[in-house]
Amino acid sequence: MQSHSDAKTGSRLDAKTESHISYLTLESDQVVRALVLMEQITSSSRGPFGKIKMVQNSVGGHLTMTSTSARLLSAMSFSNPIVKLVVNSAQGHLKRFNDSGHLLMSISLNLILESLKLVISRKILMDLFEIFLGMCLEYLGDKDNEIQTDVVFSDLKQMSSIVKSILISKPLCRFSTKNLKVCGDLLLETFLSSLPNNNTVQNVSDGVNVVAFDGDTVDKSTILHGLLLQCPEIVSHSKQIMQMRTLKSEQDGSYTLVAFVTVSMSGDTEEVGSMQFESDMCVDTDHCFLDILEEFCDKLTAENVGLLLCQRVVHPRLKQRLRQQSIVVVDRLGVTMTAYIQDVSGAVPIRSFHNLDVQMMGKVAGVEHKIFQDKSYLLLSPLADKCVVTLILYSPEEEQLSELKILCSSCLLSLRHLVQSPRALLGAGCWQKHLAAVLKNKVKANRADIVRKTGCTILSLTQACKVFTNTLEKIAVGTGHDGQDHMSDIEYGHLWRLPRGSNPDPEVVLKCACGVFQQNMSKLNDLIGSPGIVVKTGTKEDPNGHSRLDIKQKDLDVILDLSAPCVAALTSGVLTANTVLSIGQFIQDNN
Image (cartoon, rainbow, N blue to C red; front, side, top):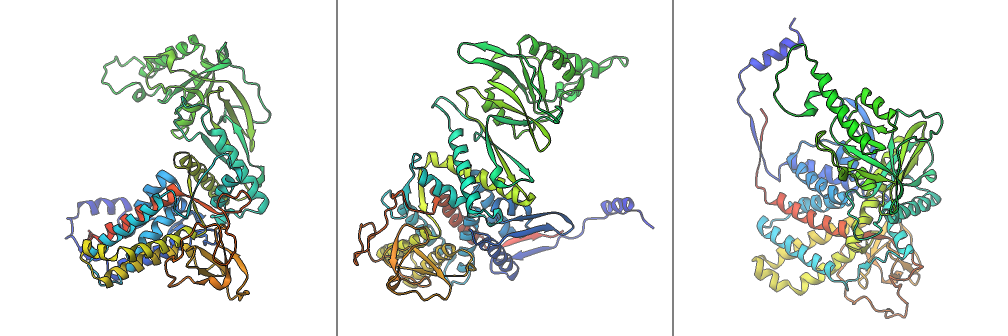
């Protein structure tokens, strides 16, 4: 019998077999099936009615439950090159915004699949999609458009609407009314506390360190002003008073000097430098390197450093030496904490043991021992000009906690983007439906010019526009399994949701999905095949005398989507679809 290792050796000695190259086109059944499956997964995960997915690899392992695009894409593996291309585009978008990944993929996949049903030149179709995208962006860029509103940070009602709209979009978190308010208020407080106090502060991180603990309920979540670092070497049965060196100044008051080292202090030769050296066999090189590190520790003592933070490992002998000098040591912090440490202390990372400058040291106002879940942590309190906070999240279930952490991080990042672009879209599907109606009008008004520019026929233009607008309307509806009928109107171009099969009084006045406008039931039509807007919106009163709801009213319960990630997702989604449509053949070497 041949051993497993022998089999491996034999396989390496075998001659390379002849390459088996397969050719696939976008219309191939294998490609279409993969695109349809991915579109179903994506569309059914979007919004508050999205279906939670359970993901596990073929050999078992961790079971992931989620509906968020970030966790879903990281838990799945993809072999189809077209799906990979769309997923890579979404992941690039998520790295920047951490939101609207499903929106981007839904736009791309729907445009691709619907385009395959058309008998139109791909080149013309791509040109038309770019023209449609340009029209949409032109409308969204107009400050007087009907689906965007300026965000006023002092308007807590408006800010709460934005946060609530983000939180309710993930069903796995299962927020009760109470927990939704508690979590929303906590996120707003966290965000506002993380904003710089003045224009001179240059944050490296996002200002918020999110720490998650399971076992308790969401309403127990809290915020700490400062940076929380796990410190397992401190006993956790009771709080300890931290004995460390402190300094005083008129400007900062009492403070602790911080040294932040990003290289290992374990005494490994590779950490001292990449060099060639010769030594006698009786010389202990490890001992020599430890001597260098001990000299470095003596320099820290001479500079009155009170806290040493190390990204990697500190040798036990060095820890003991530093503690004897009342210097607290925290190691194994990892790369992810680097930016937060720089923000809370202002320390410059030390990458060499030979050139220590006092200007590289940071400062913290205080260091306090904290205990969470029977584990020890240190809370580093920043000086007055630093804004770093730690958000403590609780949830009774592991997967729910992971979803909550991603959701809160996404919400906080979105709010930070809002500082740069303080605009919000009317959510719950209304902005997509309104944009589709606007696009129908614009295409109709510029039909002759578009035909001249692209060389397409009127029929091709109509079909392409239908694909684009149907994609927006399909995304507006969401999963389609929410147990509701979807209506629209020709006046506002918004979306209305009614209980499925209901037959309300034609004269009853209903609010649209986002909560801004109201309309008589008799004025609503089925969403499918709805025309563009024929009455200009923005007037204070409709023709029947019903007063319209003003976006800026503070008593409105409005659902809002942040403009920046949605517009970026729309742009990237269309451009990704065009990239896929431009590919004629996919070649795979299966050897």
